[in-house]
Image (cartoon, rainbow over all chains, first blue to last red):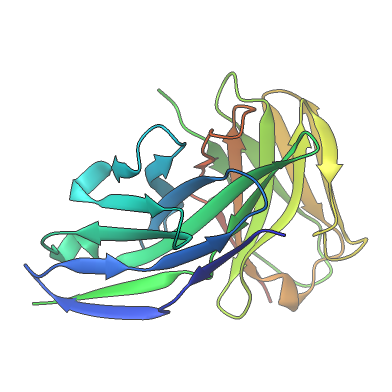
Length: 115
Length: 114
């Protein structure tokens, strides 16, 4: 069965320092993986997606994520945090089960950026 | 390029009233999802449609909730009668069919039941 675990519910970083948001998944098949960002009072916006083409995926706003099959991880990183990065981040796995696509969401990580 | 459009953005009503939330998916997308988000329970999938047909409604809380998709460009989520515990942000998302296709979300409807 699929599952997604976001290891930290809250992360605080100082502006200009690196960001690491951790995500581990379990999947019976070859999954597709996504990271979304949600700013206050907004919907979820796609940051990046992994679909087996390349293990290092670059997304919008300077974010990237690396798919590591051996570790079943898909951690999100950014070299230098900006105040505007403060938001909630969701890791998502999708899987095809008998022709039906399921999207499983992690519980989210709230990123706080300190001035 | 229009994204997923939800209306209304905010709804405040008294318990017992009927509430209808609306969603227009991205043109060409053939899967549509309704989610509910609260602080206590996070993001919950309520129901999703493929080609206008409900595929999985196991997340619909109870019979007071119903969803329809009469055509490829419109869906509604109805609550009748509404209760204070239904207060939440309701999101609609759409996607093209395919394993590697991401969902595209609307900005949500913030529902408050007094």
